[in-house]
Image (cartoon, rainbow, N blue to C red):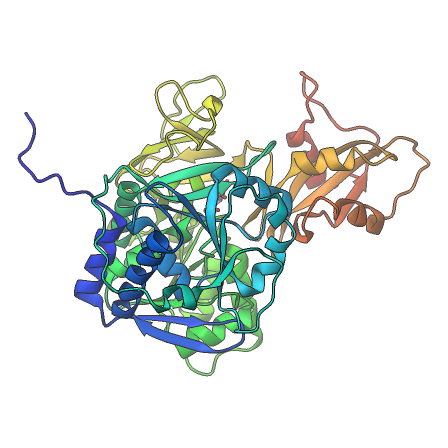
Length: 542
Ligand code: ADP
C-alpha cells in the first residue's frame, strides 16, 4: 500500500524559492581578485537567477536537458548559475580549471556544453582550446571590463546578458530525478568520467549536511566557501546556505593564506570548508603572525585528503578553532562521512577523542558503507580489518555519464571507492591506503600512470614508477623512481620537468626523482607500488 502523501519533487528551484521566502535578507559577499568587495542579498540573487533563466531560454536557446558549462571561481554569478541553469531544467556543468587543456577539451566535447560562462581572468585557458570545442555556441564573460578583448568567438558580457531580462520566470515542472549538475572526476588511466547529479540527490545531500550531527549549519552562521565551485558542486554548500539561512562568503581566487585570514576577519566568518592544504597554510600564517583579536571562526570542515591529527590539535590549542573531518568523492556528491565526537565519548581522554576525530567518520543518514576484503568477504566492523570501501546511498553515483564502467560497481549495486579502509563497531570509517593509482596534491589529482607513460617516452628512460609521498604543505606529492636505459646516462631533474611540462600542468609534475636498477614487480608483472612505497619509507629507494 502506498502512503497518501503528495508527490512533491525535491528540486533545486524549491531550494531557491525557500531561500528567497525565508532568508531574502541574508548576504552573499564576494571578494573579487582585484581586491574589491561585492555584497548583495539572497533576494537580489533570486531575481538575477530568474533573469538568467530568461536569458538562457530566450537569448541563448537553451532548453531542458542542455549542458551549460561554467569555468569560474567562487562568486555571486557562479551561485546564480548553479540555480538559474538547473532551475530552468538545463544541467550546470562545472569545469575544473586546474585540469590540463587536453582534459578540459575532452570534458567540454564529451559533455556537449552549448554555452560556457567564463571568468575574464580564466579566458586565456579557454582561448587555447576554443577551436577544438565542437559544441560551444556562446562564451559568456563574467567580471570582464567593457574593453576586454579576446579571441573567443561569440562572446557576450554576463551583465549585458542579464540587463534587459525580466525578473519573472516560471520554473518548469521538473522531475526530481532529472539531472541538475555535472562534474568530472579524474581517472587513473584514460579520460575523466562524468558524474551526473539529480535534483533529488542534490536536495537530500544539502538538507542532510545541515544537521547538528553533520555540518551543523543554521541562520546564525556566516560561511566561507573556500572549496572551489568547480569541485563537486562545492560540497553542496551553495545549496545548504540557502536552506539554513547562512550568510555566504565567496573568495573568488583569493586563496592565499593571508587573503583567507583577511576575509575571515573582515566578514566575521564562523564556519568554513576547504582541503587540508588550505588549512595547513592558514594555520602556519596564523602562527607566524597571530591575530590580535580572536577570530570568529569556530569550525572548519575538511575533506578531500586526510586531516592531520597535528593540525586538528594545533588549531584547537593555539586558536580555539575546531577542525571537523569529512570524507567524500565526486561520486558521492561528495560528502559521505563526517567525524564528530558523540556524547558517549565525553569521558574519553583528549588524545582518545582526537583519535576519533582524525578518522574519516560515520556515514550520513542516506549513505551506507561496507568493507570488502581481498578475498571478497565482508570485513567485520572491528576497526582493524582492512579492505576496499564500498558505498551506496541516495546521493551516490549509479553509473558514469556516457560510459559503462562496470568495474566501478559490484553486482549487488555498491560503488567501489578505491579507498582501503576499516570500520569500527561504532561505524567510524578510517582510510588506511588507496587502491587507485592516483596522487592527491593540494586537493587536486595527479595520475601516476599518466606520468609514468610520459616519462617512459623519454629516450634515456627504460622504466618509471611514480608513487605518492607525504608532504607538509600539499599532503601528498609525486616521487618518480626511474630506471635508465644505460646505467651511465645522466638526466638533470630540470630536463625532466621541462620534458613533462608539455603534457602536464605545473602542480602535476614531480620535483623529486630517484634512480633505481629495477622497478619491483608483482607476480603478474605489474609495478609493485606497495613495495616501492615500503622501500621509500625505509630509506632504501636510491
Ligand atoms: P573531491 O573533489 O571531493 O576531493 P574526488 O572524487 O576528487 O573528490 O576524490 C575522492 C577521493 O579523495 C577519495 O576516494 C579519497 O581517496 C580521497 N579523500 C577524500 N576525502 C578524504 C579524507 N578525509 N581523508 C583521506 N582521503 C580522502
